[in-house]
Length: 94
Image (cartoon, rainbow, N blue to C red):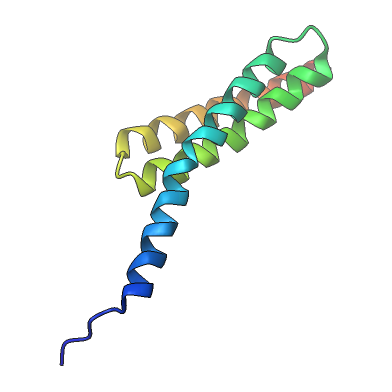
């Protein structure tokens, strides 16, 4: 027995994919904002920037996974590890 999804179901799937595709824009904005904070001369802003980078890494992983971009996913995981290392080092220095 073949089950054919209704047109509404197909549109819902498209809507989810469109929303996931739009995720690249907030991911980019968070990345730029975190870069701005990391360049700050205030230690608290720099530390916030490192943690915000982790948010951007997560957003990029979700987008990369949904867009079938495995190299981007691996890059973001590696960058997240470096961001955690940087945040911990910054925390020890304060």
